[in-house]
Amino acid sequence: MWFKRFLLDDRSSKNNRGNTLLISSALYESGKKIQDVPVELAASKVQTNEPGFHWLAFQEPSDEEVHQLEAQFQLPALATEDIRHANKYPKLEEYDQTLFVVMGLLEVKDGEVLVGELAVFLRKNLVLSVRKDADQSFRGVRTRCEKEPENLSHGPGFVFYALMDSVVDRYFPVIEALELELETIELNLTDVASSIKNIKRLYALKRKVTVVRHVILPLMEVVGKLHGGRVPTHVQGLGDYFRDISDHLERLGQSLETLRETITLAVQVAMANNAVEQSITTRRLAAWAAIFAVQTLLTGIWGMNFEFMPELHWRWGYPASLVFMTVITVFLYKRLKKKGWL
Image 1 (cartoon, rainbow, N blue to C red):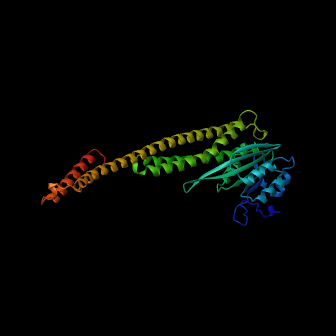
Image 2 (cartoon, helix red, strand yellow):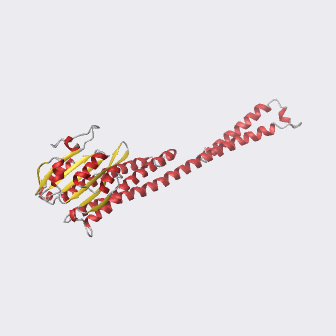
Image 3 (cartoon, rainbow, N blue to C red):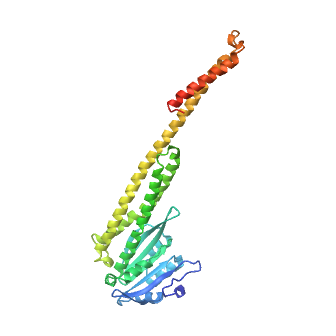
């Protein structure tokens, strides 16, 4: 079996691509860690009514390995299908004795918002999490839970809360990064010459905000099902904990709406600046056209083939015409410059 490749101490086993498969597999009872447990043994124990619960965490399993998990732990087929396809949109589903929850993971790398997924299976004696497309570690969650035996004694429900709380807390730096990017753009917003560049940056930022909204807003609905009305049996008695997460998500949602509104306003300002820039360019072209129109008029007159044009036969006619044209050009240039057209 592929489970035999797992190292069951505190180190993570890896597949041949270097991706971590098993993060940890341990048995907990009365709020305390009893021991690390081989995956196959944990799979058999969760089918019994023995006291305690098993907490297993996996990262980047292949489709075949997800299928093995489904068979070993009798996981719902529809839920494991979601893991294989990794749609990364939050959801909550109840299957008989199993609660299945998907949460989106967010992080910013090189200015881009990356979306991963954390899927959690919850039973009265099992917490099984699968992390995909994300480098974020949740070892700190396990350490935190083990340091709070009184809370951990609530069982899988508290572990699930701790995982979700950690996921939501990591949304805040992402929102802050987007706000900082917006502030950077706003510093150049009054620069008329950069209006097109600002518009492109603002629309790119708006796309990032949309990606984040698609992760955070559906999770608000999921959390609402965990503390209001009929809640799943797996998390009963933990309403206050999930209500706190809901408050955090509300703050994040408000920040996102403020970001969207500010971006929309900034786009309008940038487009207005672009219109001003185009107007300035049009005025400059019109001003130069007026200057050259005078020259065209004069050369057109003197280019006529009339027989009687005394100035054409005057000795100083040519230099006088050049001086006259120069004087008019300078006069028009100064007048248009004074009016701000040039």
